[in-house]
Image 1 (tube, rainbow, N blue to C red):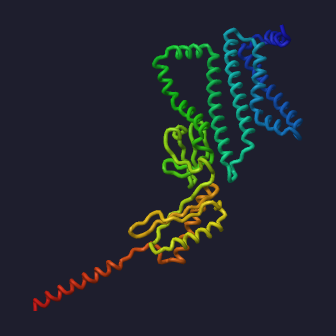
Image 2 (image 1 turned 90 degrees about the horizontal axis):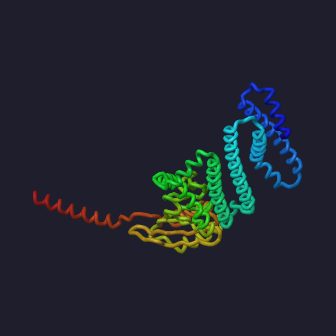
Image 3 (image 1 turned 120 degrees about the vertical axis):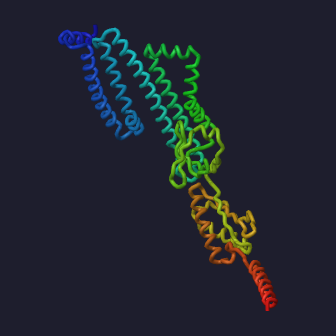
Length: 380
């Protein structure tokens, strides 16, 4: 008999009138408090030991302090329960509880390892720079795969933990063995979860969208702000948020303006009279974009894209490094072009000519006057 079991036995004889469950609960509470105190002291000692060096160790201790505290409490409770005055039935129940807790802790450790490894890998990439295509590829891929891994680990840990209980294990076996209506119901119920899980893997591998991509979804222009395990958050230009299921981007068409590059071409449409000198407007645009810091120096084009019975449609194309810069550049160019036409060629603004209508009206009024005069002469 070990020293701890001998001590517990003598303590039980001394307070034999106390119920066994009360003694066990008291022991668990006491050992949990002792484990928390021990963990806090040990953490402070380790933090002080690595205060001036090994920054990664400090970060690891800070990010895993809750996990290590739970592990310390679990280990202390597992040791105490071995010597607790429990019946065989109670001991079997506590064994199942400890088994489920062990699987939960193992899942927590796996999730923490995945998060720490992914954060260390992504630390070398920055998406707050102009040329961030490569960074957005890696950030999107790692974040989606991390969420898929989290979901998989949680499901496996939950299933393994529940299977430690005899009743749940038998129920699960009966469900899998039946292969009947219950299996179909469970399959249909799990379809959205599995669909989004598979869609997340497809998006991580093929990457039709990435973090900070400029997209047009359901007629709304915005940027991919967040990709979770079940949905995508799109930041609309007016700060609204469009939440779209993850599977939407696999099953429906959408527009991605920054699929291959973060650079983007902005379009400005104007309507002007036929008398507008397009060459002068084209020369002015070439000088204008040189003064715009948002212009990336690549595209500055003026084209006549349509002609109606009253006006011509002019399209100005200007390029920028990012989609937000392209939006601001479009607004600036549109404002400057309209001001140039108004100040230098006011006659070329859209107008409605009524001279022909006026001539016809004059002739019609003259004819009506002649008829009136003839009728008046006949009456006299």
